[in-house]
Structure formats: C-alpha cells, structure tokens
Image (cartoon, rainbow, N blue to C red):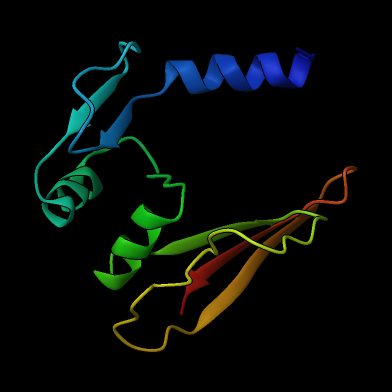
Length: 121
C-alpha cells in the first residue's frame, strides 16, 4: 500500500460507521454497527447528532435516501472509464420532485478523476 492508501485506511477505520442490512449478523470493526430498523427514522436520528456529515455510498442506499428527500448534498467522482454494462447510479431512483442543484466545488486529480460537489438550492 502507498502512503495515501494507508492514510485513507487509518481515517476510515477511526470513524463511526452504520451498515444498513437485513442479512448481516455481525461486523468485525468495533466502530461499525448494524441497523435493521426503518431507514428514514435512523437517518433522521443521525442528522440530529453532532459530529459532521453523513456520507453514503453504493447504488441502492443513496437512491432510497433521494426518494425520501433526505439528501442535502451530492458528491460525484467521475472516473475516466466508460462502462458498457452494470448497475448505474440513480438508474432506478424515484425523485419526489425536480431538484435544482448548485455546483459548489470541483477538484481535478492527477489520475484524471474529477470530484464534483453539489448542494440543493
């Protein structure tokens, strides 16, 4: 592993994490807990806590949170790869209404990746 990967691993291991699952029975990381309750209820509780932002990844969970109107900010990282198959981000997302977004930050990496941060207007 390079220094950047090691630093990411140290930071990721140190933060508290929540896994939404109906099938997992345990996790090895002491900073991780499994939640099986109502997604909306749990996210609203997390939003009330102090301590910073809630970051969500994957395809299913973000789509569910968007459909519930619980996403305040979007972070997209565009990879310099064209995928011909596979699941698509937001492919099956049900929007409550059109969401106008404002681009608030961009970052270009040496790899060619571009990070974009949008906020709801």
